[in-house]
Image (cartoon, rainbow, N blue to C red):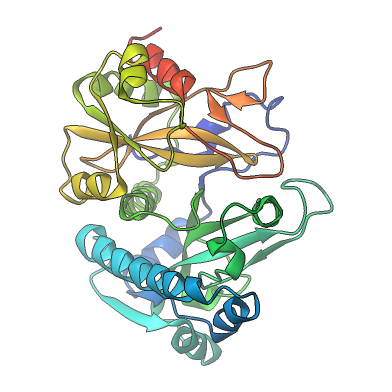
Length: 341
């Protein structure tokens, strides 16, 4: 099994998701993927935006400026560590700012491929005809991303998320994306970035092997039983506030632990096959719980949708806000899959 793909997720009922948006997707032709392999990979370094810092000052949020700067620095450090440890597809890696990459693009360079995280923003409800999607090649955080507890701000941010992209440099603007992975979190963890990097390489390998890179539901379910012998790590930031360890163990009869991001990151960076973690993924503007093996950073299973409610296998959905939490129903669904029910 290579990775969870658009074809597999498309097996989810289309009546639930009339406009489908995959957690990841690839358009890379084999010849383009081959070109990317033979080029130097540029990791685009995120930078602080003085206009955003001015926004903090204008809104009386000077205390958030340090958080903003820290988020940029942490992302760059995490991306560098993940790429240097797990990216094996290219023989040479360089780090450049978006301005430096823009200059190469303007000079019509064809010696590089680029990998970067950029913001995807919807100006209207996701999937509706009147919505307009914009893309960036930088993180493009704004002051509302750091202001918690204000419903209006949360609604304004309901339709933007971070996307990991890989492109040939000549396609940097409005050109074909070789592969992309969408993150629910606009502040992705090291483990989530590692999954994105791994799934990209798996897709590239499948394209060069002349295979589709798409596995069936049966291919994925064949790996689900492996969860029984792994400790399932649930991030504290994703778990429902009503679910504690006792509640988790009551519905999930396999090893499970509520962990902070640092512990999950450590197990992923150690490639510890004794652990798996839940990563949230978007499908049609809603969410699924995608279970990733810490050993090889590949999917083991995902929760299926349940009908008759506005919930997806127990993952809370609140129209207008990006509310997503793992609760007892999520774990019950996973347990049934591991048990083959």
